[in-house]
Image (cartoon, rainbow, N blue to C red; front, side, top):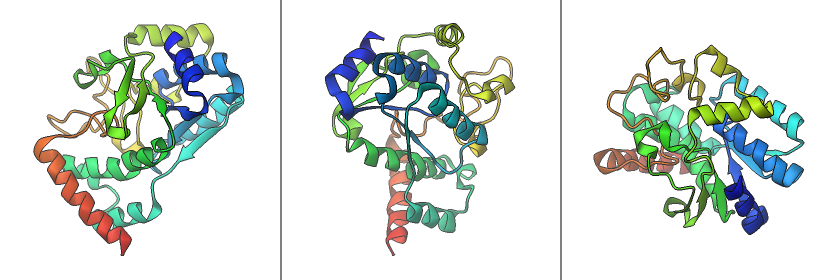
Length: 240
């Protein structure tokens, strides 16, 4: 709460909460509404492949907190070029193509949005995965122009998140009751089996991938080079 309050007071309307309306994001929205009321600045990225339950939750959040939610979408020409070149479900073919899809539908729209901000707030927790194990509560986002990146729940446990949700009667995504533990795009997310990790339901067909989309953890090495080649070809196609 103190981190979030500091961010809101320090950056004002140049700070925004980015959320996909998972449990952590809902906790942050609830906290921010207590601090800033209806002036809370929230945006989400609509990849055009979201679950219908996610869209319904967006409407529920608006009603509950009396806030506006900005919906950021990918460029239509880029999505059309990608689908016409690789098909609608390219993500099943290779990790590089899956990351390309994430780049077009999520990362590029996010970069455009963050270009107008000085700080953004995310729901990352260190316990979510090994790749997030060193997430700072307040840091500098070198991937997005050096703006501030706040992760107020970085040191929280899953238990703390859900205790807060129950205590404050925070709206929650209905897919959690169906066995989902991490919720993204509809074709790329499934419920997890007992004993599986919290992000096992994301891109479950991939082996030895980092289970990241590129928003918070960038690809490296040969994978990044493959993505760069695919992206360059796609953007050339989209511009024609």
